[in-house]
Length: 76
Image (cartoon, rainbow, N blue to C red; front, side, top):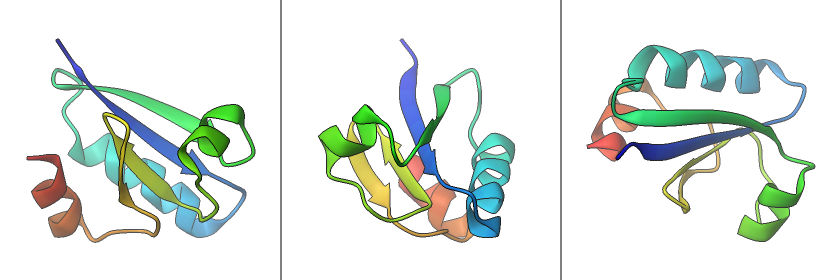
């Protein structure tokens, strides 16, 4: 079963960078990746207010743009 990775974004350069970082780092064989708006219901459910935010299986990993090394470490 795949793990779930959610990237919450707004309209900022850091958000674009977060999407690119996640798509280039997380294995699609291992993760189902969803790109969601920070203004949506799911973000409200999780109490998110900062972008970009990265959530793994319902747990907030980052409420900022992580480095590639930080993301790799958090995913494994």
